[in-house]
Image 1 (cartoon, rainbow, N blue to C red):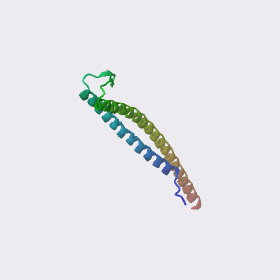
Image 2: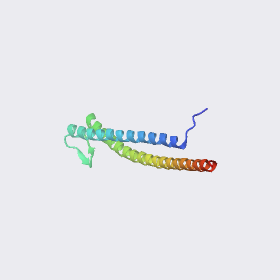
Image 3: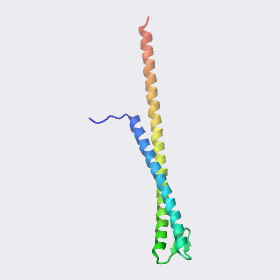
Image 4: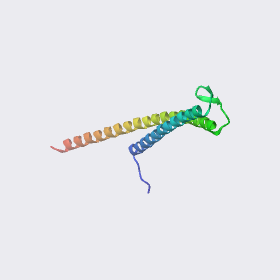
Length: 128
């Protein structure tokens, strides 16, 4: 009693799901950028003279605000890297689904045109 889906419907649904996942990944990328910038600003404003390794402060005071800045920076970097990879993965996944959907659509269009040609031949043979 389940719903029967054609291959086109299935591919369409999977492409929509992949599009949604891709958009969610890019929104999380933006959240990671905000965390990253917030962590850097927090570290700069609370620590007198932090020592930096690229964008990561490694000599901080024992104040909770400087630890918060480090945590925000590290979470921001992690989100940026992970969600960038996830966004690219879902974009490629959706491209594959769209390519297969295009193939299924062209196959269906060819099948319909062959059936129409057969009907025309049958009709022309029957008429005197």
